[in-house]
Length: 299
Image (tube, rainbow, N blue to C red; front, side, top):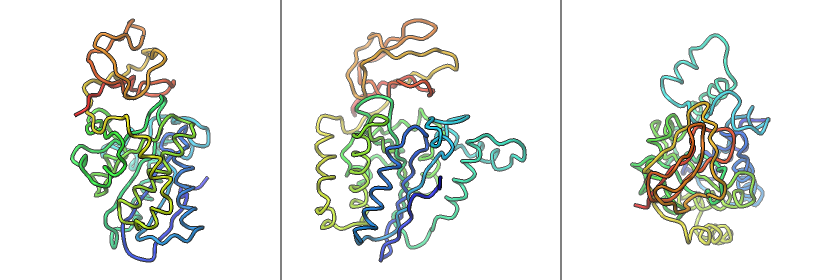
């Protein structure tokens, strides 16, 4: 399995867009969506500006259809952790090797003749209606992000440390995570495709005329966002202990309204009730993961 899915360059200087997918190995819709969009551009000889590079994240986890092998590849992008991984001359875990290879790739990215520079981290969630954008708070008004018209989570990065988007943001990229829907669904694949086309237009890579030729994708994402909040903030984060035996009650999905005191889950300590009125966000319905759920409110 190759790290690079596709790497194509337009006829004029322009933006650099890096599409990263499969950072969690069980989330494959982004891999297929990135491949489909870039292949369409190449096969249809669609004119565009700049350069598009689509890559796979966790190759070993993708091969085994697992979220990760030893640790979460989207929680390890701390500067100190990276220094430790690079200086380690002993045994390397599976994700240590992935980090090293990804850093080698990022270090080869061109720095000249490309503006803006975007990194889009494509994900999907374990619950329904999981389509939203996660972005560093100081970029929440970025027009490229706003063109997707999906819910923007403005401060999730304060609760999830060591994400790839945070690392690349600090290294000069407009970086955000694009969650396309529930893991393994056709909806997630379609939303990722639609979102990528919208981003290519918003960043100035493709013209409005080209966008009109593929207007079905623009319409799909417009239809999808109608009943979703636009901008939300985290008011509560239920982080899991290592052996908590967390069990989310069935039936919850992203942005579903909950009441203070509502029974949401159980663990070895007993009942877990909502501490706030708000909307449930990222309820955990898979065995791997450190975050049980969040409560968010529209702002």
